[in-house]
Length: 190
Image (cartoon, rainbow, N blue to C red):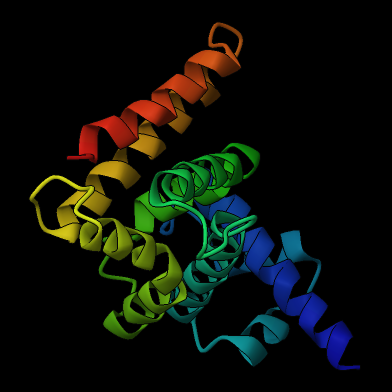
Protein backbone atom coordinates (compact mmCIF):
# COMPACT_ATOMS: atom_id res chain seq x y z
CA UNK A 1 0.00 0.00 0.00
CA UNK A 2 2.84 2.40 0.83
CA UNK A 3 4.22 1.97 -2.73
CA UNK A 4 0.86 2.99 -4.22
CA UNK A 5 0.77 6.07 -2.00
CA UNK A 6 4.34 6.94 -3.00
CA UNK A 7 3.38 6.54 -6.67
CA UNK A 8 0.63 9.15 -6.27
CA UNK A 9 3.00 11.57 -4.59
CA UNK A 10 5.54 11.08 -7.40
CA UNK A 11 2.78 11.55 -9.99
CA UNK A 12 1.83 14.86 -8.35
CA UNK A 13 5.46 16.03 -8.31
CA UNK A 14 5.97 15.05 -11.96
CA UNK A 15 2.77 16.81 -13.03
CA UNK A 16 3.76 19.90 -11.05
CA UNK A 17 7.23 19.91 -12.59
CA UNK A 18 5.92 19.68 -16.12
CA UNK A 19 3.17 22.28 -15.69
CA UNK A 20 5.18 24.76 -13.63
CA UNK A 21 8.12 24.52 -16.04
CA UNK A 22 5.76 25.37 -18.91
CA UNK A 23 3.36 27.82 -17.26
CA UNK A 24 5.11 29.14 -14.17
CA UNK A 25 4.05 28.97 -10.54
CA UNK A 26 1.25 31.54 -10.75
CA UNK A 27 -0.10 30.12 -14.02
CA UNK A 28 -0.50 26.59 -12.68
CA UNK A 29 -3.49 26.00 -10.42
CA UNK A 30 -3.51 23.02 -8.07
CA UNK A 31 -6.61 21.71 -9.87
CA UNK A 32 -4.61 21.44 -13.10
CA UNK A 33 -1.82 19.59 -11.28
CA UNK A 34 -4.37 17.18 -9.82
CA UNK A 35 -5.92 16.60 -13.24
CA UNK A 36 -2.54 15.99 -14.90
CA UNK A 37 -1.47 13.62 -12.08
CA UNK A 38 -4.83 11.85 -12.32
CA UNK A 39 -5.52 12.30 -8.61
CA UNK A 40 -8.12 14.19 -6.61
CA UNK A 41 -7.39 17.56 -5.05
CA UNK A 42 -7.60 15.97 -1.60
CA UNK A 43 -4.76 13.64 -2.53
CA UNK A 44 -2.46 16.59 -3.17
CA UNK A 45 -3.33 18.12 0.21
CA UNK A 46 -2.69 14.76 1.88
CA UNK A 47 0.99 15.14 0.88
CA UNK A 48 1.46 18.91 0.79
CA UNK A 49 0.04 21.69 2.93
CA UNK A 50 -0.14 23.96 -0.10
CA UNK A 51 1.45 24.93 -3.36
CA UNK A 52 4.58 26.40 -1.76
CA UNK A 53 5.12 23.22 0.26
CA UNK A 54 4.78 21.22 -2.97
CA UNK A 55 7.35 23.47 -4.72
CA UNK A 56 9.82 22.89 -1.88
CA UNK A 57 9.26 19.12 -2.07
CA UNK A 58 9.73 19.25 -5.83
CA UNK A 59 12.97 21.22 -5.38
CA UNK A 60 14.30 18.53 -3.02
CA UNK A 61 13.15 15.77 -5.39
CA UNK A 62 15.07 17.34 -8.28
CA UNK A 63 18.16 17.91 -6.12
CA UNK A 64 18.14 14.27 -4.96
CA UNK A 65 18.01 13.03 -8.53
CA UNK A 66 20.63 15.57 -9.67
CA UNK A 67 23.03 14.57 -6.86
CA UNK A 68 22.58 10.89 -7.64
CA UNK A 69 23.27 11.45 -11.33
CA UNK A 70 26.17 13.86 -10.71
CA UNK A 71 28.02 11.24 -8.68
CA UNK A 72 27.44 8.30 -11.05
CA UNK A 73 30.80 6.62 -11.66
CA UNK A 74 32.57 8.83 -9.10
CA UNK A 75 35.11 7.48 -6.65
CA UNK A 76 37.08 9.47 -4.09
CA UNK A 77 40.22 7.75 -5.39
CA UNK A 78 39.84 9.43 -8.82
CA UNK A 79 42.19 12.32 -9.61
CA UNK A 80 40.56 15.73 -9.08
CA UNK A 81 40.54 16.79 -12.74
CA UNK A 82 38.93 13.50 -13.78
CA UNK A 83 36.39 13.85 -10.94
CA UNK A 84 35.61 17.41 -11.94
CA UNK A 85 35.07 16.54 -15.61
CA UNK A 86 32.95 13.51 -14.71
CA UNK A 87 30.85 15.67 -12.43
CA UNK A 88 30.29 18.28 -15.15
CA UNK A 89 29.45 15.64 -17.77
CA UNK A 90 27.02 13.96 -15.39
CA UNK A 91 25.29 17.24 -14.56
CA UNK A 92 25.08 18.06 -18.27
CA UNK A 93 23.65 14.61 -19.04
CA UNK A 94 21.05 14.98 -16.30
CA UNK A 95 19.80 18.32 -17.58
CA UNK A 96 19.98 17.32 -21.26
CA UNK A 97 17.83 14.28 -20.44
CA UNK A 98 15.57 16.33 -18.13
CA UNK A 99 15.16 19.87 -19.52
CA UNK A 100 12.08 20.56 -17.38
CA UNK A 101 14.28 20.07 -14.30
CA UNK A 102 16.80 22.55 -15.72
CA UNK A 103 14.16 25.23 -16.20
CA UNK A 104 12.61 24.50 -12.81
CA UNK A 105 15.94 24.68 -10.94
CA UNK A 106 16.92 27.87 -12.74
CA UNK A 107 13.59 29.49 -11.99
CA UNK A 108 13.25 28.44 -8.36
CA UNK A 109 16.77 28.14 -6.90
CA UNK A 110 16.75 31.78 -5.85
CA UNK A 111 13.00 32.14 -5.49
CA UNK A 112 11.50 33.32 -2.20
CA UNK A 113 9.18 30.30 -2.50
CA UNK A 114 12.09 28.02 -1.60
CA UNK A 115 12.64 28.11 2.16
CA UNK A 116 16.05 28.44 3.76
CA UNK A 117 15.60 24.97 5.29
CA UNK A 118 14.92 23.53 1.82
CA UNK A 119 17.98 25.31 0.37
CA UNK A 120 20.15 23.95 3.18
CA UNK A 121 18.81 20.43 2.62
CA UNK A 122 19.50 20.75 -1.12
CA UNK A 123 23.03 21.89 -0.34
CA UNK A 124 23.57 18.92 2.01
CA UNK A 125 22.51 16.54 -0.75
CA UNK A 126 25.30 17.89 -2.92
CA UNK A 127 27.93 17.71 -0.15
CA UNK A 128 30.00 15.09 -2.01
CA UNK A 129 29.97 17.32 -5.08
CA UNK A 130 31.29 20.20 -2.99
CA UNK A 131 33.96 17.89 -1.60
CA UNK A 132 35.43 17.59 -5.10
CA UNK A 133 35.96 21.35 -5.07
CA UNK A 134 37.46 21.17 -1.58
CA UNK A 135 39.88 18.44 -2.73
CA UNK A 136 40.89 20.59 -5.69
CA UNK A 137 41.53 23.50 -3.31
CA UNK A 138 43.55 21.32 -0.93
CA UNK A 139 45.67 20.12 -3.86
CA UNK A 140 46.18 23.75 -4.92
CA UNK A 141 44.58 23.12 -8.33
CA UNK A 142 42.07 25.99 -8.37
CA UNK A 143 42.38 29.70 -8.92
CA UNK A 144 42.71 31.68 -5.72
CA UNK A 145 39.00 32.45 -5.39
CA UNK A 146 36.48 31.34 -2.78
CA UNK A 147 35.08 27.88 -3.52
CA UNK A 148 31.59 29.41 -3.75
CA UNK A 149 32.74 31.54 -6.70
CA UNK A 150 34.55 28.63 -8.38
CA UNK A 151 31.52 26.34 -8.04
CA UNK A 152 29.17 29.09 -9.25
CA UNK A 153 31.35 29.71 -12.30
CA UNK A 154 31.51 26.00 -13.12
CA UNK A 155 27.81 25.37 -12.50
CA UNK A 156 26.73 28.45 -14.46
CA UNK A 157 28.98 27.51 -17.34
CA UNK A 158 27.71 23.93 -17.54
CA UNK A 159 24.10 25.12 -17.46
CA UNK A 160 24.85 27.57 -20.28
CA UNK A 161 26.54 24.82 -22.28
CA UNK A 162 23.52 22.54 -21.75
CA UNK A 163 21.13 25.26 -22.92
CA UNK A 164 23.29 25.82 -25.99
CA UNK A 165 23.21 22.07 -26.70
CA UNK A 166 19.44 21.89 -26.21
CA UNK A 167 18.82 24.78 -28.59
CA UNK A 168 21.48 23.83 -31.20
CA UNK A 169 22.07 20.11 -30.86
CA UNK A 170 21.86 19.65 -34.63
CA UNK A 171 24.77 22.03 -35.20
CA UNK A 172 26.97 21.13 -32.20
CA UNK A 173 29.12 18.03 -32.22
CA UNK A 174 29.73 15.87 -29.17
CA UNK A 175 33.43 16.67 -29.61
CA UNK A 176 32.72 20.41 -29.37
CA UNK A 177 30.49 19.85 -26.35
CA UNK A 178 33.21 17.81 -24.60
CA UNK A 179 35.76 20.51 -25.43
CA UNK A 180 33.41 23.04 -23.85
CA UNK A 181 33.25 20.96 -20.67
CA UNK A 182 37.05 20.73 -20.58
CA UNK A 183 37.24 24.51 -21.06
CA UNK A 184 35.24 24.94 -17.85
CA UNK A 185 38.02 23.14 -15.98
CA UNK A 186 40.58 25.33 -17.74
CA UNK A 187 38.67 28.43 -16.62
CA UNK A 188 38.84 27.56 -12.92
CA UNK A 189 42.14 25.72 -12.61
CA UNK A 190 45.27 27.43 -11.37
